[in-house]
Image 1 (cartoon, one colour):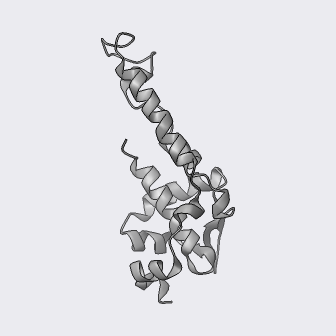
Image 2: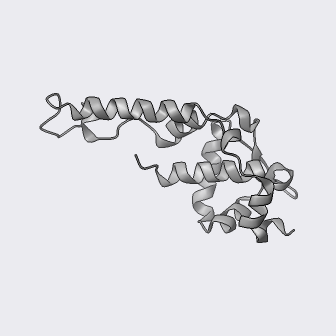
Length: 147
């Protein structure tokens, strides 16, 4: 399975914030650290805020921070939300599927089982399990932490 860019960026934002000094950072800092568009990160941050993963503060000294402890952020739940559904193939949507094999092939069952195992494994992990060590973060992103 390949994660969408949105999911990838969501995970990066949360991992970065979990290791950030004082537990917060701005969208601009995160964008620079990963070399990705601020525009994309605004969408990610808005979504993560609506879902209760991020808290945002405007103004001087503001930015993004985790809205709950890293140990309370389940990676499987996050990926399910950011991926927006469990349809790895066209045949999973019986209303729009154009596949002539729908209902006659075992691939759909195999993919469904694989997807269930994928989410089950991710569901065993929290953001805390994946957390970067502060020293590693300073080495990976020296410009952001040189302040």
